[in-house]
Amino acid sequence: MFYKVSADSVRLFDDHPPEGKEIPGFANLVFKGQEVTEISPSPDETWVKVWYKTEGANIIEGWIERANLEEAGTPERDKIVLWAFLKSCVRAEFAVNQLKDTKPYFVNADFLIALALYHGPNDTITNLGHKDPADLD
Image 1 (spheres, rainbow, N blue to C red):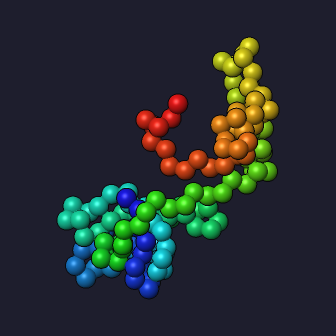
Image 2 (cartoon, helix red, strand yellow):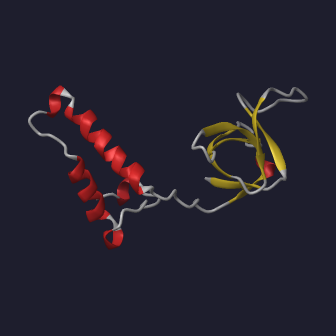
Image 3 (cartoon, rainbow, N blue to C red):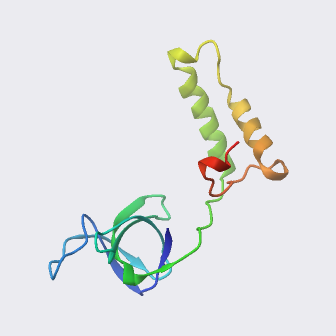
């Protein structure tokens, strides 16, 4: 489930939901409007373990009180940065072709790029959005 933080700023607790007045350490502060994704609820469902991605693409996890969250739709997918995608294709080519079991069927970065172009809408490489395994060809 996807949520947005509804309070102005909230502590995100590291290890477990706080019990009583004990305040464990906190991993971060989250601010109003931050999109978070649920990992699991606490047994009494008053706390939710969530994760979110920072602008630097670091993943932050922690516990937040459910009262500080409001349901949100599926977040917008990250845009694909073309140079980073091409670099990933070349790295995949090198990594896969170094494996003993790959021979004699080598993977070429050009094939990976062409495959992405073929499956992309209007001959562009885009992030396809959320797909369930049943949606894949």
